[in-house]
Image 1 (cartoon, rainbow, N blue to C red):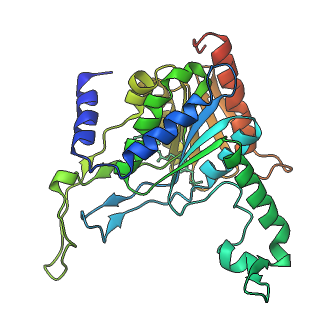
Image 2: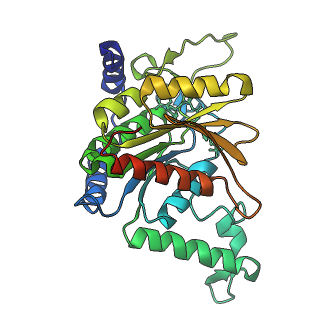
Length: 312
Ligand code: PMT
């Protein structure tokens, strides 16, 4: 990778606001990774999910956001857990959570009702889905197979991703990065951001946004050089989607790039690997496209491990 890319990434981190509870996060990640040692036992995947916010003020009232619901990351987390992977789930606060997708919109208020004795009980209408969600989520946490690290801003997201990648180096090829988060390409650098709420009534406002350095190259070649790396490419124009996905694979050295189009992303994706393009679609019996997608990627990682890290 070229030196300017590494420098601009370093400059990004040097000027970013300090990550709250950094030591706690580092300790939790290190402990989680340690439990996967010695390598060759449980594989680990780091799943990023949801959209990053870009604050416009340090005491943030306004921010730029994006469309991502976190559904892809949450569904994939369930699939990887079922396949026996340990999962670090880096997700946007408030976006979709694993095991909760079949619950109604406001689970706490809708799924429970007063039991007439100052307590609450599941509403019989939702009892089965509530029981399944609570059991599966808590079992993943209790058995030590799920570590949930929430973020809101772009700064938090990239800091946490860096912590996880550096800590997981020792898992070598048995670690996968599955980067489904929709990460902002533009931001307001912390050192040029105003402290207080931007005032209105001063006419139109012009604002210059800086380019967010792409971290994929650093992740792939410096932070976790042996890990199996999967990135995602989203476009709304199908005419450019595959070209951009192919370019991303080559430029960043990804082991797989999952190309998806906004409208059809829940039905089908095309995975680009060094072997070519593979259409992955959900069939009539599958609830989510993530089921065949995750199966396909696990098989690819197995070949990568068996080939001794050489991905052919
Ligand atoms: O959350 P859902 O509603 O279920 O939707 C899922 C999804 C459409 C968000 C997901 O499938 C997806 O495509 N995520 C990537 C969206 C995207 O816009 O990618 P990008 O072109 O901004 O970035 C490409 C890759 O680089 C991504 O894997 C991203 O995590 C990573 N990236 C991007 C910018 C940046 N500065 N650093 C990065 O590492």
